[in-house]
Length: 122
Image 1 (cartoon, rainbow, N blue to C red):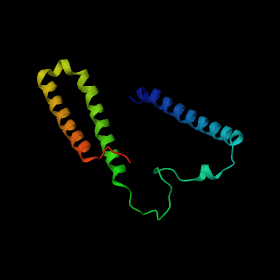
Image 2 (cartoon, rainbow, N blue to C red; image 1 turned 30 degrees about the vertical axis):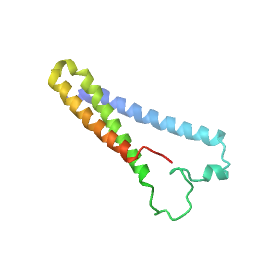
Image 3 (cartoon, rainbow, N blue to C red; image 1 turned 180 degrees about the vertical axis):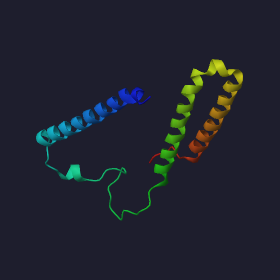
Image 4 (cartoon, rainbow, N blue to C red; image 1 turned 120 degrees about the vertical axis):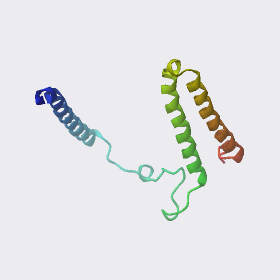
């Protein structure tokens, strides 16, 4: 019975060795050929869209969070639409109208965000 798992073990060992070899070679080549001179532009913070000028615990604008939440909502919507489209012929009209209700709830939420001005960026 353990002989059935031997090909999987061999595959995992080869994958780990191959990954380690690639990481080692890639690091060595990039270290030898890469530019190691750091300038002010390379070392400057840029993650939040503005320069860091105060304490790291300062409050962020709520628009960053709203955009992130909207992205997650619509990303999940697309993640639900693909499997639904694949089985639509099997689930029939009940599945179709269930998805239409789901999309209606998302559209109502989108319109609410739009009316509140969450999508306006100044």
